[in-house]
Image (cartoon, rainbow, N blue to C red; front, side):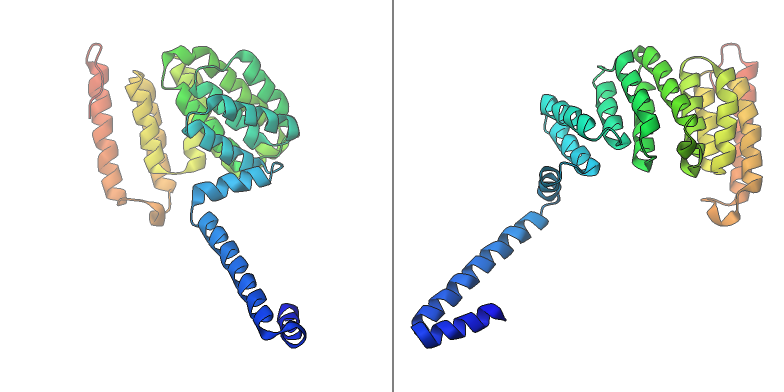
Length: 277
């Protein structure tokens, strides 16, 4: 309303042509601003990068920009960004976990790197994205036998998380942490240490599909007798899981468990046998 009143005043005092020119200039400027904003919001990647640059104190924004830099091959710039963000935002577990994740993915992670992140954890808030970052780190470490030392350090990180009350109070952490610990022990050829963690994870997730996947992981790692014990636990999970959350019918899962049990028992009876199917 004030610009409109100003244009009317301009038309009365200075002439209609000048007022019309001013009105046209205003429309052009607003149109350009609208076009620029539409261009920005129509491209998610550009918008997120703009968000990261304009909000340097946002951990999510800095994390997103680092992911973009890694994706386009600007590794040094990405690490520099995360290093700077870790110094500015020491209370952000998202930033520190992203930094460690990319160190692990590039096989550059050292004991000092894990220790640095471990020391930061007590002063940081629990973040579900942080836990997912930890899960991705474990998945990367499981892919290669060259990561044996790093797997030990990852167990240390999980131990540190377990000692922090806000992590222990998070239901998601209480489900995921024992599962990750079990996988790490399994990869370290310590099935006996893996068993109580995997059993606990199966009970807390209470999901038959995840339970059967866990049985398969143990069996494919060569620990058939341990897999049979986990299969008994999976059967208990099936009995307790609500019917509305099952992907298949309960009878179908019973038949699948019966089939898997037969495969595992046959593998035990076969010298150096490896289960198939």
